[in-house]
Image 1 (cartoon, rainbow, N blue to C red):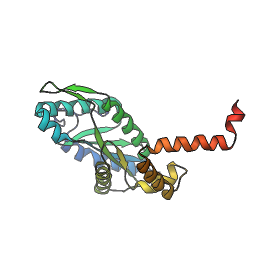
Image 2 (image 1 turned 90 degrees about the horizontal axis):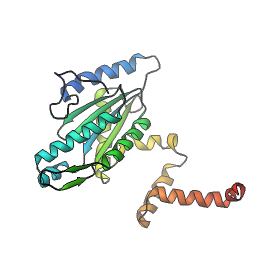
Image 3 (image 1 turned 120 degrees about the horizontal axis):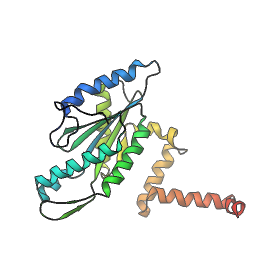
Length: 225
């Protein structure tokens, strides 16, 4: 992760400050555009789930410790070229030069998994088991060409993540990446989602069940024995 100087850091988390991010993000986007082939660049917004509840139940010192803990987790995962900042309150922002949104999605999933396994002792002595956050990702050039457009779309993706139950990462205009990242149509995925909800299981479980049936139907098990 790019290292901030002493005039550009957030006092609590030691990440870049919001001011520093607003100065550096346009420069990074300009650099991505400067290449004739337009190098991709992804922007991620991260928001701690139910942060106000943490402050209300456990105190502001605990809230600060949660912010510090997540900042350290982010620092330990992002690449050397990434820019990570505390944007304000319990919201963080990260810029990943040279990375497509699918790559960043997978990286954030790893970070989310790591955070979920952390445990903190609260100011009141209670244990907080697992840190949870939601995230939204937008990428240049597919989602936008300006700082404002990318930020707006990443913010909309973050909103959808929180509105859908939190503890998840969403991509800007997610429906446009379905043909690129899977072999399923949008209608199939919508029906899968409804079926999973009705049966009270995960979509992944249904897909694994369907794949087993498919392999059995075409005799793959017989071939392997």
